[in-house]
Length: 327
Image 1 (cartoon, rainbow, N blue to C red):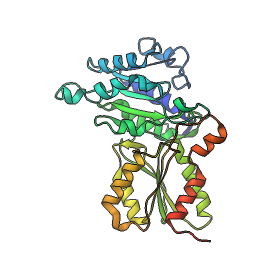
Image 2: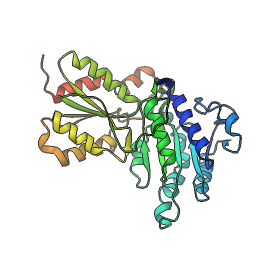
Image 3: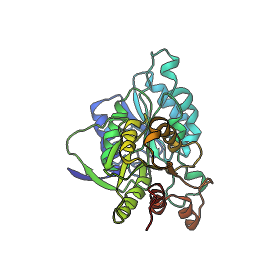
Image 4: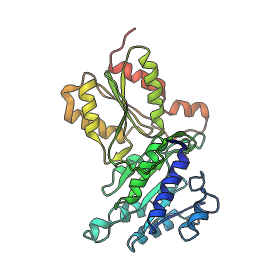
């Protein structure tokens, strides 16, 4: 094993796949000359040249559309958005073309494209740069949505996404690019749509994904000292959703807490809540608790931002509520 930063794991995945397949290219703002806004493409221009690592104008609709169109001529593009907040400018290409072209062409045109970049909050970036769009894209049939939480998952899942013949939304975090983790020396690929039980437990199931899952681990460590055993499921993929892993865990623990960095209305945790109560209602010993951001745009003030974001204390409170904890 070697230790890589999250950004290095992303770079390795893209570079290894581009060495393997000449139809793959990377395109986006500052991906080439600047080595990526978050240095996730460092050194790739030198290795692959300007025809395969392509800087673009600030025109997300334009280069997203170019990427989608190029899949129809045999290419497999990786489109980097500096942030998925900016992807709103290009969302028409993602939803109305990338997600639908296979069906609309009667299967004649697959769309092997990866749209990747950071999602959700990243400190004091305020209302228009702190939004989580996982549930938006997961709502659209034809798209796969991946949200890794560590370098190992990031590399293995990005390689799988690049090889997939369907469009994949690959969502990262500005606050994770410097995170370090062990990554195998040899090649590996992780299956899309399979969750990871990172921590086994018996008293309550906690489901989360992306950077916010760190709060679940912090909470679980604290709860263990009070005799409460938490099982933590890292979804890794939001769509397709590995609901079976969640159901199996809930059948064991009989309680469920869902932690998601997103607004509370109509999000991924809402869908999980519905599916769990529909499939294993009789196993539940307490109502499902979901933990989300406040139902407002993200504030700029760090004091207010801390209140807006879910944290480990929120997880601890939710877990104690579902296990009917009393001192």
